[in-house]
Image (cartoon, rainbow, N blue to C red):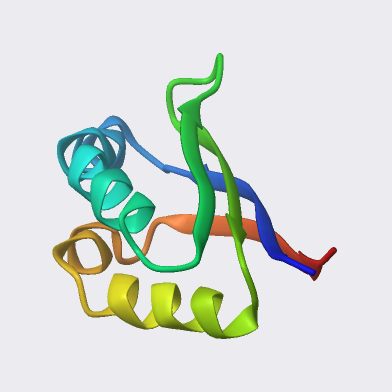
Amino acid sequence: MSFHLSGRLICASEAEAARVWAHLPKHIRLTRAEPGCLSFAVEPTPDPLIWQIDEAFTDPAAFAAHQARAEASLWARETAGIRRDYRIWEA
């Protein structure tokens, strides 16, 4: 079984989107290097304020470790308040 997250990061303004663009490369690089990360994609959509997020981790523990790392990161501080609309499941 693996643990998945899929959804959207939804900015309310161009200023929020600029913060995402500024910090996203490092967030992606760090996440992909985490133990248990099977895949991690954050892709812009046709709407310049919305990104599609798709993540897969080996198990709930790897996903929880990712969440803990991300919550303590510069990414979390710089993107705090930006709306997230996610679905999480095991497959």
